[in-house]
Amino acid sequence: FTTAATVTVGGPVMSLFESWAPVQAVGLAKLAATSVFLVVGYYFVVTAMRSGDIGFVSPFRYSVLLFSIAGGIVFFDEVPDRFTLAGSAIIVASGIYMLYRERVVHRQAITPPPQRH
Image 1 (tube, rainbow, N blue to C red):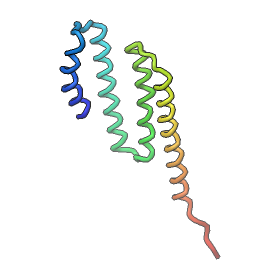
Image 2: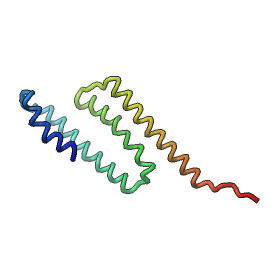
Image 3: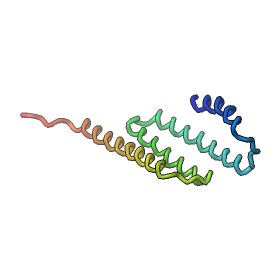
């Protein structure tokens, strides 16, 4: 909702400072392909959240950064700068750490404490 509201309000405001240009067929095709991938991706994220263990599924949500960078390179010829790559690396590393931590906690919960005699 927030993105839709921002685009709805920000679009007309930004049009005051930028000139209008017709959308070329290549740009429209790229936008359509990106939209299809976005819808399919969200469908799978929702399905995973509904059916999987949240502690296991949640760290994989950070992989969206990697796919966004790859999509930007492939579809829009964008090259991420060093700050984008550094921030993405930190976020992905935290997701990997969360996955590791959840496995350790789960393993400790399954292992019964030693019995005293």
